[in-house]
Length: 216
Image (cartoon, rainbow, N blue to C red; front, side, top):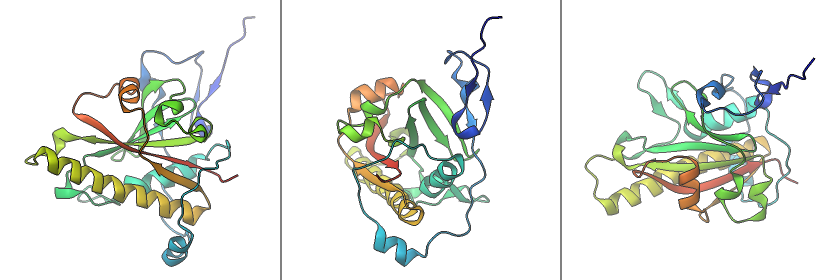
């Protein structure tokens, strides 16, 4: 009997009977567990421990931790209005969070709290030239959709997208400090190559990347 390769989806969220990635990436979309919004360390303690780290274990993040992290970064905390955990200028919500892991790259969909597959394979090295990005379990990529920034001049767009990315990045820093994770935000990104790999249209601009994982 021929062997059937069984691919177990990330973190036990789903199981797929598939020998490899296919052109239909939608088959690889993943629902995330509901975020756990209770608990965590007191804010002042998290601020005390907030820091950048460039030494990461290759240990993968459990699905619940990934879920909580993405909700903390840019999840919806007011369902009635659709507003987020991080502010954005004029509530454009122009900054999108892409999740790059060994198995592939995904876009975080805050409305459904799920991951939408956008590219196959390991793209981690494209998210930065530092050695640690290739082995850390998770690299977040912050992408601004300028089409959502109606009425803003080009110079103002750069200001707003930078500030809004900073808000999201700081949410990630505080979550990592609370959960004992390591993280560092980075500006050194091969933007042209990564944008091509993520199939980003021209109006979507890569702003920053941020590595997350367990400390060594």
